[in-house]
Each structure stands twice: as C-alpha cells, then as structure tokens.
Image 1: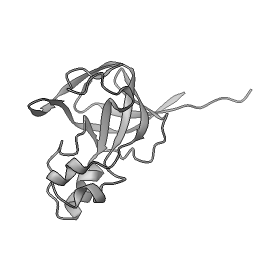
Image 2: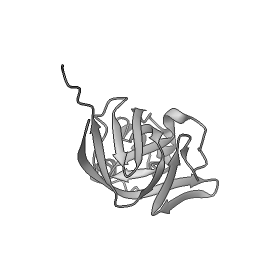
Image 3: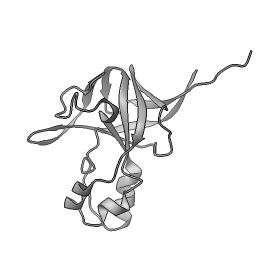
Image 4: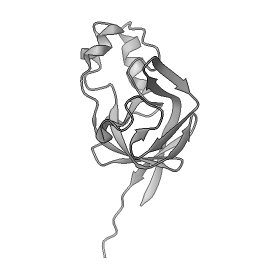
Length: 151
C-alpha cells in the first residue's frame, strides 16, 4: 500500500442544534464526528467531505454560498467526487472510507433555488471512519492506494 498526497483541509465544521460551527480541529471515531448532532446516526454517512470546486461552481453561476452552506464537515482543495465507494483517504491518524456520493438535497435551495440541481453530482462524498483520531485545519490529505503485488 502507498499514500499519494492529493490535497489539504481548508475548513472544518460540525452541526449543532443551534447551527453550524467552524472549528480548527475535529475529533472522529467509528460513529462519526464526535461533537456533531448527527453523531452515531448513520455510520455510512457520518462524514461529509466537500471540495472547494463545489463552491467555485456555485460562484461561477452567481450563487454566493458561504463555506459550510453545503453541510460539509471537511472542506478540501481536492475533488474526491470521482472516487468509488471503498476508496480511502488518510488525514493524520484518521482513515476515512468513501461510502457514496452525496445525494441531492433540497435544503440547499435555502441558499439559492438553483443550487440543488447545479450541485446534483458535485456536492460532496460521504465517508465512514475506519480509524479515528483528531484532524486539524491545514492537514494534508492522502489517497490510500491499495497496490497488490502479484506473486
């Protein structure tokens, strides 16, 4: 197995009953983002990773969406939307496994009516936590490349 550096964490967020919180670090375990209101709700969708590309796409259509408006926990400068379920990202000691692309979310219409359709395939990816730990803003992101040797 090898690691390929693909990007960096730009911002980190979690949800509370009072709204979204921007933070410099997130604690993750096998149930998700520890302080998040969705913690231990749906393990397959416990972490939402969004690319800066999604915000740039919105901006190119004159939509002003502030960071965290897409509901992400982790905003990165790498576009992971091409990754298949089972692909793994390594961030510090944390290992995240992509489980699915983010589904269309009508709540994005609160930001702009055009946003749900525009980001239908470009909102983010869900991941589950394989190995927990604490991640920080600015950490590098690595794609775990499972290289199998042929005997």
